[in-house]
Image 1 (cartoon, helix red, strand yellow):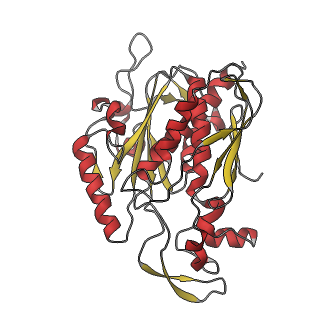
Image 2: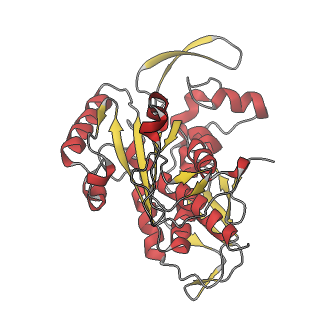
Image 3: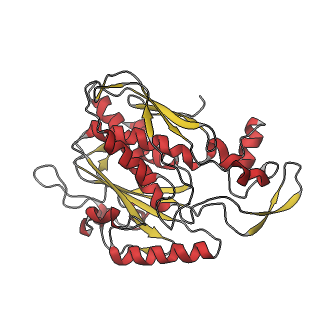
Length: 352
């Protein structure tokens, strides 16, 4: 079990390193006959790719997807879908300073200790560049799901939060600004904050909220394979994620049962939705919504103390091209992982 695959029925295995020749993946379990909009797939990639605005890393990658198998005459064949994304803009020399030392709060140290040999260029396999392959699979999964709508957006940067419930937001505005926040006033403040942080040579964290609409009743399995558990695993597998909560989340711990219970309407819907669209680990037909917390990017353009491979204390200064805030580019990644989870359970339901 090498940990490079995700999903049971709709399954993705990824490969590649940040500064290798290419990254890519194999999607298995996708049903045959699904019409694939390749332009829609590439659009998802464009939302995640680096260099797209002034508030993200300036590494320039076209991130063009090349499909090798599993799609013929615009439709899936039911066989494995293989794809590659070439790494076109490598600057491996930017990482020569960490060949023998470890960046604080990165995976450098643990990879070296676990494997005894690591690709230090951009973090190698531990780099967030691996998530590009997930976005490809998520774009395919969205086309399997069709009627379900998945909307993720930046809900906070540092201490700047959207102060409106998601029901009052216009999801059509998510792509209207660089930070991917559907509230214009909050977006302006978030962008300015990120720019300030970048000038300081520092980084900042934030949260992504995801809302999934038109989910049928019955997705999810009892006990260990609950829908929210799999969504949590999916989100926590994304680089820099430090927290996941769905529905009322941690706020629910402050409430009384009489306040928290979602009372039924006669048609099976509920008057409130503090359950977040999931009860007993199974979707109940209401909107699924959750929030994902991202830490500040670990590489900062300031001097820090660290250790080298011999345990000596050394001084390190961050180099390379890095996001001052990973949240805006994480939005399509959150959507992709949510889509893969839902596609997996949707197809599993069809086996009954």
